[in-house]
Image (cartoon, rainbow, N blue to C red):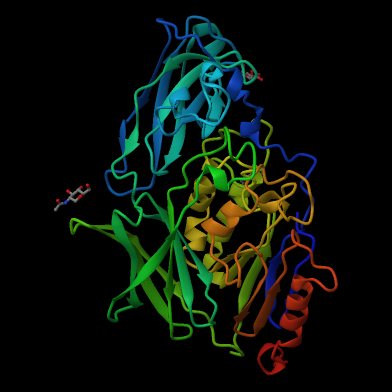
Length: 454
Ligand SMILES: *[C@@H]1O[C@H](CO)[C@@H](O)[C@H](O)[C@H]1NC(C)=O
Ligand SMILES: *[C@@H]1O[C@H](CO)[C@@H](O)[C@H](O)[C@H]1NC(C)=O
Ligand SMILES: *[C@@H]1O[C@H](CO)[C@@H](O)[C@H](O)[C@H]1NC(C)=O
């Protein structure tokens, strides 16, 4: 939910989504699973198998797997959880969490789930079913678990073989953002390569011109960077490494190609595929500039998983529509309530995969909403728990914004005839505050020669 966004502009805003308050139905589907109640009830006659077991032979970062499963005591509340890493038992629990004796069998939520009868209506009678699920490369292998007992009293009945992408560490899901200067583009991406393993960089240049390489900085964080549960407990998942490279002194409006690279210390290069973008217009440029602004989009799974109550089903349609219209879009502002991960970190990878076609092609500028930031006692203006313990860390790390201090999510960016002043509704904006001064200055310093030629 966004509470305000100030814009000074003279141009065409194509789509202004209605910013609806999304509190009442704001339940993260993964939160319905009572992870700590899980018990082990492996059954010899139950079985679950996944194929293929190796994914991404041709460098793809997304693939479908087929599950075949059987249970001697089938029920309509049997469900299948997808775990990543594939070894999900209590040995991977946070050691701080409770005494050793009382460690739960399971301490991590699955990255997604689906009912066993979803595409096999006969499952309850026949005790056999099959299901197709889409996986994205998320830096780890996967396993699939057949549960009985519904989401409230999960009992592990069968565990599948492991499935993995050929290179789980591969650089993935680039997202562009305006840099601090109008002629600078930033590229942020995720990989499994830390700074002790490889040097991250972007190889880029004008279409048909020489290529150059720009180094990238690397960020990550750990469980203790989270402010509370579930982000610190069952929703925690290793975020890998998030890299940002700054492509400077771009020619306005020129088309550039780029690819993500990691040079391993033994000399081997690992590459992403090639992407391209058009450099931003120069300040004051009198041309049509097409801006899309929306909030509250969320994420969804193309295979229908996780979404038993149709929560956010529409986000895939919105994404698809944006991709279809991409030739008519120059820059996107997603002004808060990004993916409603609400402390289930796996959802951020899935979101960056979902918007990759958009974010890798045009600047994808985000702002912070209550679902990214709010957590009691951590400096958010509203003291509710809507971020699920993320307290802004995921939003400010997974996406770049040209803020002076990324923990304070306000910034300005000049784009052709626009000056955008992006406020942060989750930090105090009242008269006399640091943010108030920023907003005042941002609006007062807008150059009307550039932003209001009309
Ligand atoms: C599948 O299971 C769900 C959850 O228990 C139930 O609501 C639904 O009616 C079942 N579908 C079929 C076709 O039996
Ligand atoms: C370098 O290390 C990578 C990852 O461990 C490995 O796949 C690759 O074969 C190695 N290359 C050489 C030349 O040793
Ligand atoms: C998404 O689009 C499809 C096809 O146009 C439509 O049938 C479906 O109802 C849409 N879903 C939502 C949630 O709007």
